[in-house]
Length: 519
Image (cartoon, rainbow, N blue to C red; front, top):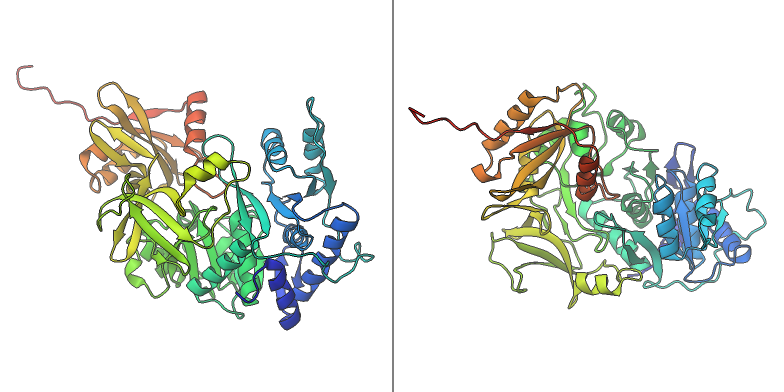
């Protein structure tokens, strides 16, 4: 790769497209040249005032403001390693990440600084962490606007990116410059993007998505629009107002968007393609028709970046649930428990190799060895191969075992979410004396829908036509929301813990037995 680091890419864009807009936030916009200058000055400050040396960890705990990517790129110019911290974290979460990563600096704002100070001073083992801000170009005027002379290579560590933490505390994926540059290039090629495009994101910057969107913008020399947060009611209006041609959405976002009231302006936008993880199959064609652009799957994990993608031209994938084919640089297999490849159409674990790929988990050699075996990353997802494409049918650890039957939670969730009144669902195993486990569904309803037995019965009856009898949920509990991980997967351990601590109304929908004549 000609320009193998994020630092190189920024320098290149400052040289060949310096006057072009790079970052657009609520508080203003900045060109590639302006960002290059600002990040160089901050990098010098980090080195000269804060003593940052190559390999030092620098945490960032900020909302979606320009200071986030500025601090990220400046830290990388200084040879440091960025530790993204969710700005919604409270005491225990922040304490864990700072201690686990060994961060000695944290870039934050006035709102979060008191929490950092409290965490740093609490207990008998205080943390030695210094709080700074990203400053402004004017405020950093005494520092050089030329990048510091620090050696940064493709394999130089760029991020300790903490994973979702659906079970226990999260693990930090060690991500290099090569990882981010390749991910930006893969997404540019998949979506067919170039310098005339406008990228838009609304996820928190501590998540993966705005970061790879930044790498994408550097790759193609296009502007990145960053919204303060995701709002289902305002997202498409922002797409239209900002002239966005590309965006990435995930989790419940497609369903929440679709369930907004249609307007005459829905197709009045410049969107050329939307990439998504887990497009609801039943809504796929309707999403495309409503907003007039192809929606395509891209599959990956924090550990592996991107593995599979469906190209805009792959119209046969619409509504199929298929994820597409391996992206350039990746090889994908579906394997049985003994490691052999399963026949086409037979389920097995999805494993992947190639680049981008994490180096491993920070301070977790055993977890690294369990996840990456003989060069293959084991995703934990159950998939099938179909005509060269792949379709996820569940998670190895996300199954209900009812009697002698294995039920993939995701299959039941897809059936439930085809109901127009269901925003999202989560299917879990409920202990049962007779069958061992029964199927329980937590259901989040659209606003204004009555959360009663009649609604539960109607939704389950709709799923009954799509599922084998043994897969139909016996129990339904309505919830106001579903706890989610930073990657927008539903955090089922947290959901079950919440339900145990604060149980809601559970509807038992087991069909009543009809008494035989004379009984």
